[in-house]
Length: 188
Image 1 (cartoon, rainbow, N blue to C red):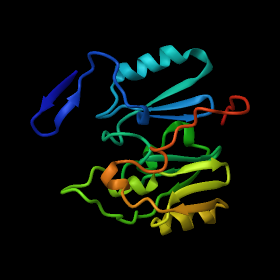
Image 2 (image 1 turned 90 degrees about the horizontal axis):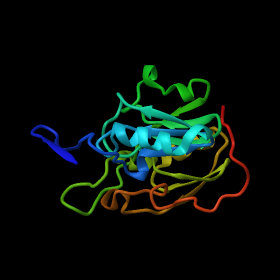
Image 3 (image 1 turned 180 degrees about the horizontal axis):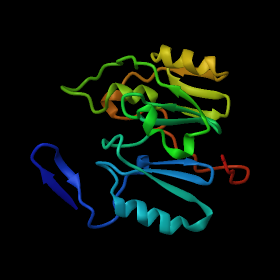
């Protein structure tokens, strides 16, 4: 399942479908899938086949090959997205966001970590959740990002999450929307 690269360590092989749930972002009928160290091409093909024609599954590659998508792209509401400028250049914006307003994430505040090394990058600060289209739950230390969201009309509920980098998970990571109301939307 893995192959070892002397420079990069263990890399997922493409022998069988493998991906972490956090390699996937759901946005209405569009599903973004990150091909990376935690999700391979066969995983994308499997997901596309299983979801069928009701969803458009987009493979994202070529800009970030680390793990998980929610420290690179954070959906705010239909038409507004936060992108990580260290991982996605202006010429690399995924096609699905070409007509969206983009908040280029400001530098994140380093919240520290308790191990001998961090389990997540400082971009863990981008890992927030939207409770509804105008309310974000975000790490209270990420003041520059809070201000950027507020400038776009987003209300913010800043909460303490001291160990996000140590635990390798922010608010988006520790939540899952399994109970949904309404109908499936198309954000295009």
